[in-house]
Length: 222
Image (cartoon, rainbow, N blue to C red; front, side, top):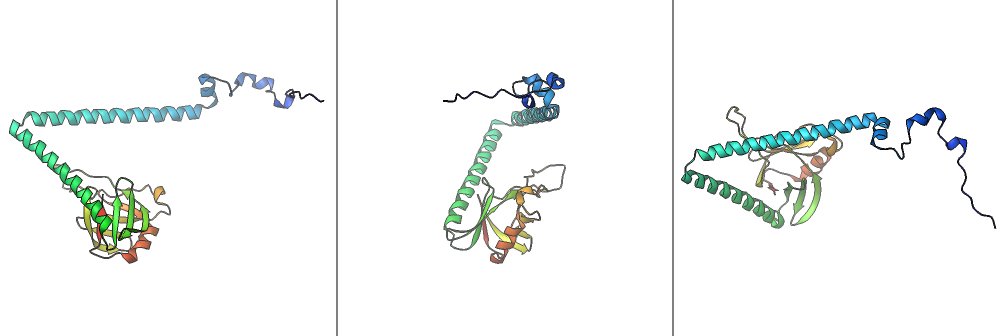
């Protein structure tokens, strides 16, 4: 019976004497890894530094906002503070009610309509609960009001909206928000900016749903 013996490594599998100083990359430590991949380590260091810088900037802004709020509240009377808290709570409750109402109406609306799920970044063309088309969506940023600018604030719509106007590449809603179409073949690869308060779908999706849309159709955001 022949006994199996492991094959001794030949000269072709051994490191040449002139490469002996390079070290063994398979069992090397951090120093060897850094010497073997200096470019990767450099890029990794830049990425970590950028993340730390962004986190630091966000913390500074957060503390600034907290300080500003505390100063504003310090100059209010007790009655003004109570009234402000009640207004904020009322507005939050109104938003929750509007979102829940939009979900309910979208579920039971028997007419053809569009649903936009903000959390999942999806838009749906539905009728009587039947899903006709599902589309990925990109949202533009929200723009807050500024005293030094005449530009009006812009927020992602919530609740029920109505289509006010249509074109081949644009759906305008009441209130000024718009659903735009992307010129890129793949929506995820489109890195161009979306106007504040608006949203964007692919050109293929826009062409597919456009024959089914009309002015006055409901669009539910939740």
